[in-house]
Amino acid sequence: MRLQQLARKVLNRLRSPASEAPKSYNRINAEDAASRLSLRDAKVLVVGANTGEDCREFIELGAREVHGLDVIDSVGSAFQHPRVTYHQESIENSSLPSDSFDLVYSFATMEHVPDVAAGYSEMARLLKPRGVLFSMASPLWYSPYGHHMGCFQGHPWVHVAFDHAGVIDYAKANGIDGERGHSIEDIVNYMLDPRYFNMKPAAEYVAALQGLPDLTVSENELLREDEALLGHPVGRQALALGYTPEQLLPVTHRVIAGKRPARPARR
Image (cartoon, helix red, strand yellow):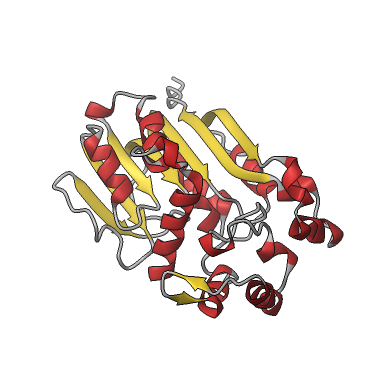
């Protein structure tokens, strides 16, 4: 969908300072993941492949074989390559065989997956023994810009502090009329639609990794926004509604894990 692709582009723009150009936030994370194994002989699964740009990153970094998985109709439409195969499926329950991938990689995807625990469990199933799981879910729903829409930059937590009509009223009062050809009504309809965002609390992501027996987890952490941002009028409104800093400040869930080798059968 066009708005899903717009949200991904806006996320990259918001999280990639101009001083870091030309290296994108996607590239930085792909390189981080690739540095954790010998990519030349690796079979990589990109979860949330979208139109294929993250698959391009791993081809350029030298992966032997890349698979891209996404639920959208246009999966892989922007990047085709002989070493890339696309699958229009959900990571909650894919048809791919177990123990297949040396690297399972996900960037800015798990915040869209309805069943977070099922998604991480499936990643673990698909990973080869001694393989690497690398996931960055961001921005999480209750974080300042968990709605992913750039037209609300500078107006954190509008999606948390207001209902549908309230967000539109706030936007009009602050001169926000949409972006890139989409009306503010279309933007708000999209960003408050549970089909596109799982709207899960940050703690649920951490808990989902804690119950996976086949993984050795080296990082399962939440990266937080500066608490000073809660002084924004909309931040104060969210706090007045009963939300806590522990709910509102986590922006990113970062996971790095390895799959343990299978135990030899007892004689």
